[in-house]
Image (cartoon, rainbow, N blue to C red; front, side, top):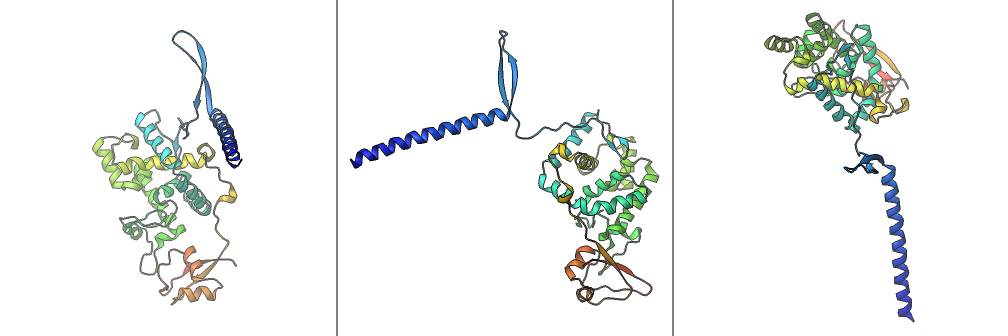
Length: 317
C-alpha cells in the first residue's frame, strides 16, 4: 500500500513538472514573439512567408547627419568624421553609470558655467568642453592640470590665479571659468573659428597652429592628429548630442533626479584664519561643508596678506 502511494506520488510529480515546463516554454515563446519583428521574405521559387527576427539586445542609434559646434557645421559627409563621432556616441551612451552621474552633476554646476560663458561672449557649447576635460569634477591630471577646466600651473600663473600651499584657485568654479573664457578668447583672436579654439584647448594654441602649418590645412577635421586630440572635439560633440536628446539614448532623467547647489551665504574674510575647522563652527557650519563648497581652500588654514580678502561660501542653515 505504501509502495503504491509512493508510485502515485512520483507519477503526479512528473505530470506537474511537465505542466510547469510546458507553461514555461509557452511564456518564453510569447516573450520572444513580443521582442521580435516579423518580416515578410520570399524564397528563390517565389514563395512568401513570414519570419520573426529577435529584437537587438543593444540599440543601434540613428546618428544625426547635421551636427554643429558653436554654430559651425561638422562635415558629416566625411566618412572618418562620421565614424569618429559615432564612436564617441556609443562609448558614452553605453557607459550609462558615468553619463547618469554626469547629468546629475550638470544640474549642480552648469547654471554657473552657462551664466559666465554668456557674460563673456563664449558660445554655450563650451560647457561640454568642461565635461570632456573633467566630467565636472575637481580632478588632477598626470601632467598637473587641475579643476573643472584642467588648468595647468603655467596657465594659472599667466592669468593671475592664486596657487600656493593654502589656496589653489584652479578649483574655484567661478574664477577658473573666467580664466578658461580668457584663454578661449585669446585663441579665437588667433584662429577666428570656435572649432579650432576647442581643439587648441587640448593641444595648445601653438600645437594646433603647428599642425595646420605642417599639413597645410585650415580645418580641424582635415588634420591628422594624435588619438587624444583626434577624439577630443568628437567627445565634446557626443556630450552635446546626448545632453540635448537624452530620451533618444535611454537617459530620461527628470528635474528631481538632478543634483542641486544649496542656498549659500557668502562671508567676506580679510584676516588670517589659523583653523578653518574652528572658523566654520563659529559660523554655524562645519569643516566638511566648508571644504565641499570651497574646494579652492587647500589646507586647514587661510593666510591673508594685507589689503587682501576672500569670499567663503557656506550653506544657509
